[in-house]
Image (spheres, helix red, strand yellow):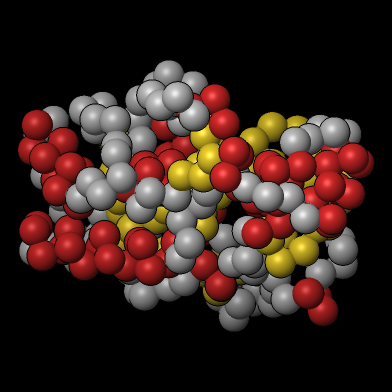
Length: 259
C-alpha cells in the first residue's frame, strides 16, 4: 500500500518575548513541552531571525551612529535617515539599487535584500531611545543555527535540522516570502541532476532550493504582524538530512545574469 506524502508545519504559540542573553534552545524546548510537541528524528526547527537577533543583542540605536560621506549621499538619494543608511552600509558588501524609500544591498553574508535586513517592525521600544532602536540580522546565521541545533539535539537525543529565516522581497515579483539565511543539519540545495523524470529522461539542470521552500512554508504560519509564532516545527521532510550551509544558495556572481 502506498503511504501518504505529507509535510507538516507546527507553529509554537508559547514563545515569550525574547531579550538579549536568553537561551533560545531552552525556551523552544520548554514551549515544545508545554504544547505537547515531541521532537522526532528529521524534524526541522525553523526560527525567525528576529528572536535570534534579539537573543544575540543585535540592537542598534540611531543616536549612537555617526554617518559618513557615502551614507549621506545614499540618504539624499533614498530620503532615508543618514544614520540608518550608515547601519545599512556597515552590514553590506555593496549597494545595488537606490531610489526614494528603497535601498537594495548585498549583505555581508551574500544574499540580496532591502536595507541589509535591518528591521524596525516588532522591535519593542521600552527605553527612552526606543524610537530609534533597530535590529540587525545575526552576524553569523549559519553558526547561530549550528549552535542551536547542537544544543537542542543534546536535549532531545534526536537528529534534527535548524533553519533561521527572514522575510525578503524578490526581483520582478510583488510581496515578501520567508527565505533562509542560516542553515544547520539540512541541505540548502537538493541536486536532481541525473535523476529520471516520469518518462525516463534524465534531468540536466534541476536543483531545488529546498531550504527556501521550507522557509516559505513556515513563514505562512509565522506571519508578519501580531501572529506571535516565531518558531515552526517542520515534520516529514522528504529528503535526507545532511550538514548544509547558506552558501549553497548564493549564485556565483559570474553566473548571475540579473546584475
